Amino acid sequence: MKKDSEPQNPKKYKDPSREDRLKAALKANMAKRKAQAKARKDSSEQDKEES
Image (spheres, rainbow, N blue to C red):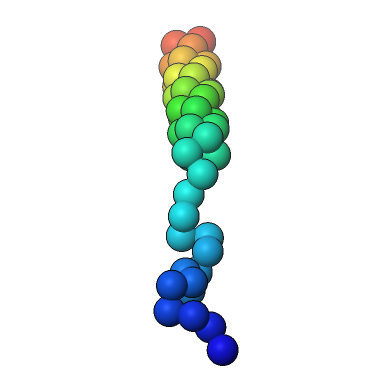
């Protein structure tokens, strides 16, 4: 039988260092995606100018 003081879902408690790592990884991923989208846009504009 479980005690009332035990948490029902232990994964609810977040490790602050893990949260910081995830936040940094998300920021890096978004910057990478933004750069890729810009590069795709620039290359497609160059293709249109050459045609």
